[in-house]
Image (cartoon, rainbow, N blue to C red; front, side, top):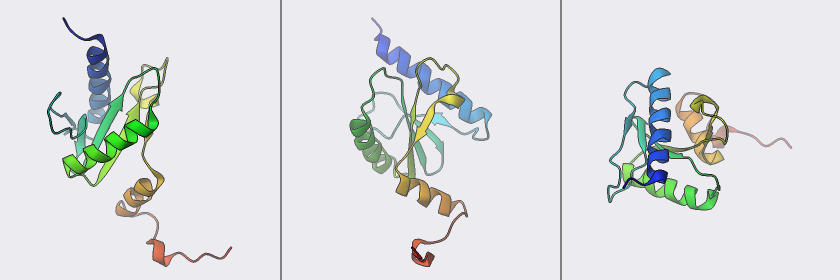
Length: 123
């Protein structure tokens, strides 16, 4: 007998995978389900792991603990939590969440902003 929650999670992972593939990340792949060494649900591109959640009740502290562990296990530079929004089947409208310090690091690596030591506090 197949677990309904697993099926729901698999559908959400495939939806995010397909969305990323269709939006400039054709190499996005699902990781091995149930593998002892959990490295996230998807590898979007080198250095980026993605964890997908489709749950009615949000468990942010638990999810971010898991995300940190998965980032380490994947040896990824960045990790993103994608959370399905209730009532919205279109994955482009789901939430992509990461800690603010991780986002600023990602943006700096993409060529935006300046190094923290280069910023003056004039307040």
